[in-house]
Image (cartoon, rainbow, N blue to C red; front, side):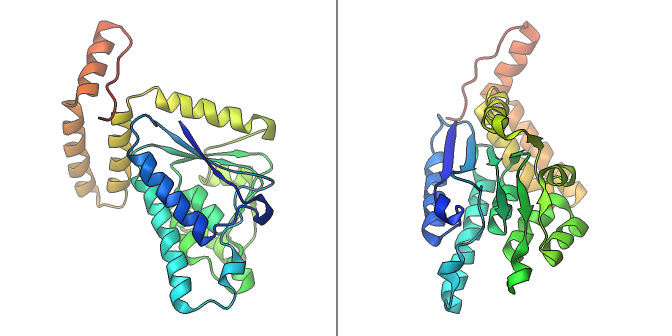
Length: 246
C-alpha cells in the first residue's frame, strides 16, 4: 500500500498548482508500480483539504485560471484511471476541491469530526469542477443543495448521502482505513485493476451498452491467470496464490 500525504497544514492542505502536479506525477509512478496494491490519501494537520489555494487565484489571468482547473481535473481523472483502488482518509474539513477529491476517490473513510462542503458560491466562485465529482457521488438534488447553499454537511450526513463509505471515531480513523485497504488488497491486484477500470467505463453507458462492455471484460477476466488460479483454489478448498499485475 502507498500513502499520499497532503502536507501543507498551515494552508489546510489547499491544492496549489505545485501540489496538484506533484500528486499527478506520484500517481503516474504508482500506476506503473505493480508492488502497490492500494493507495490511501490523507491530510496532515487539522484538515483533510480546504480546496484550491485562493492566494494563487487573486488577480490571476483567464489562462492561469484555466491551467489551474485543467490541472485539477487531470488529477481527478488520474485517480479514476489508476489501476489501484484509492481510499480517502478524511478528518477535519474537506471543502470545494477537497470535497471533490474525496468524491473522486474510489472509497472514503471519515472521522466523526469531518465536515464536507462546496462553499464557493459564498465567495462568488461557484464550485463547478467539484460539482462534477460530487454530483456523481450524491445525486442531483443533494449535490445542488450543497452547491447552491454552500453549507457544510457533517460526516454522518456524508455517509447517508454516499459521499463517504463509513464514519469512525477520530482515534480509529487511520486503523479503520488500513483495515479496509487490507481487505481489498487480499484480492488479486490484476483483478482489482480490471474491476475498477470497468466500473467507471460502464457507469454512464446506456444499459445494453454497459452489459455488452461488462460481458467482454468479464470474459477476458475469466481466462486470465489469476481468475483461473482463484477458481481452481476455490474448488480445491485452498488459498489462492495470485500472480497479480505483470
